[in-house]
Image 1 (spheres, rainbow, N blue to C red):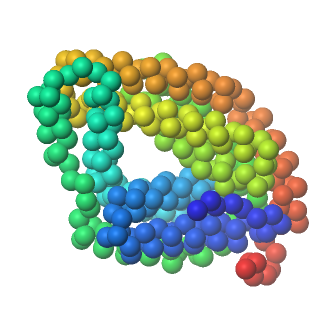
Image 2: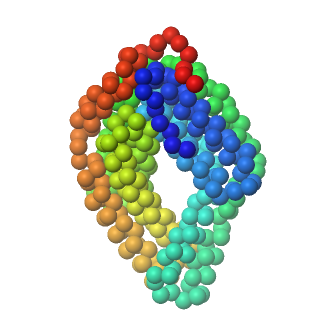
Image 3: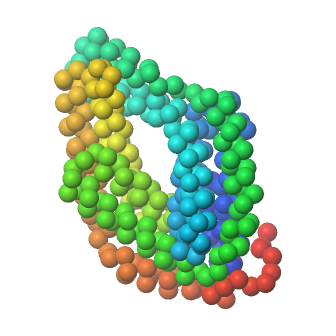
Length: 299
């Protein structure tokens, strides 16, 4: 489900609506997880990433303690679901790569065996626990969103996420470390989610940007999958020298491709982006820009 902000509405009402839809949809995935476990877990984790990104977007307008509490909730739930999804991703990455390199059947089986240590399905008890935690988070949404006042918050939060992604790109380029590239991807995804949420504010600019951000995030994701696959196989003694060297070359090439894409996307200074977005927000929010009118949100 694509989440979009609506024009001429108070910020508090819009963020409350978006988070209610987002967390409510995640709880629906948990309720039906037995029907399509892998997809439901994947979509739930994506929703939690969106929640963290949207929270960062409005964080400048909230008490720090509130931001820390909600951010910790979404982060911890996502981590509890990560093992099942990550195991599936690595196995798929191996099957995709082994066809492009000459390795023996014995080497391939050794690699497959090394990846069988991770479970593909979450513990039902864990799912029950995270359902309770997310239901409580959903109940808190009206309370903390009511503290939001001005749409100015959005321009500040968007620029801050952009700045962090830009700085992390430089760190990754300087270090060449796969973990730094993975950290960059996290910031890119947050920036992408925020940009998608704001697309109705600035359709032409952000619509085109989102496509390029999505391509960048996809490239960084593929690089990390191969980086992580190589690491797990080495630790599990499942990587032959040929496969290990192949994976290293592949993820290094993808990282170089990502830097080329990112260099163009993150060239503008954050202050310039913030200033231009603020102008659009004034037009988009209208009378609601400066604060909250005393009325109920639109249906």
